[in-house]
Length: 394
Image (tube, rainbow, N blue to C red; front, side, top):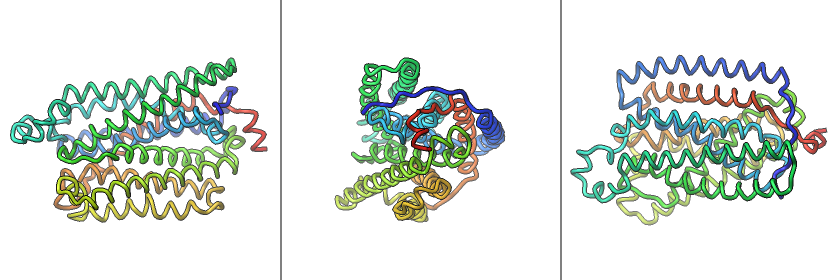
């Protein structure tokens, strides 16, 4: 079944006022964060790039995860997607900002990656062997390709959705459905190589065939958790109050449970394959992240991202309550940030667990910009409303 045909309606003033307030507060947080980031960069530039990497990838993950759910809705249709379509679209549009925010990372490649350090490459035969792929110019070209694909996908989706709203057509709906399927395939390809480039190559001597899928599952899980949190925040304001009823909230809770289970499965598969193989070049990745106190972060991620959400989301009563469901979603978001912190930071501090104050400030700085852009976009295109959704809510 293809995507539903949506009729746009103007944004209610109450919603605009709240989004204005969110945007203003987010920009204030980003401005304060920027000052602290500049100070931290002067004091410890290496740490600034490390903190920026996992913070940036966390917010990029929400952006791309929302794009995935938008594409899934384009393929499958369904009222669950009608109710949150504007939220998904506003989140996915932030990829244009994230493309700009990727630029600072280019100035820190030699601070983050061994393969970007000529001296390290000259003394390591493995890095020399991988140099045709792991080199700065090719890294930048690949990143440009990823962002062109992601930005092009959301721009085309938005254009065709808008045309479908204005002139409903079965032919256009079918074209949108087919394009959404292609978009999902392109996302799978680009995020696999993006995960290799930006995270796996932090340990250039390590490889996992499911790492890209693991990062993709993490992104889709975090994105849905973010959308659920926003639904709880805006759920009492028209037209969300009519669109996101108890049934739609339960649908979102069930989808979140599915996303959590899939992340657990992929994370376990990667760990089990490496543990059972017991090859030195593979187990070193986990040893680096299980020693020196880092195991406590792994335990926190396990409970906050997997065990606790899994058992809580088994409750239908909880999944019908948007506020209680939002607390579970926020838990998963915190766990996802911890997860990326656990992937990145042990590379630079394997001997002992440490948290720098930039590890706290940087997610706030990037998040302030992200939320401001999200609020701005959502204010421009507030929930389109379908007759079917309103009837269901009534």
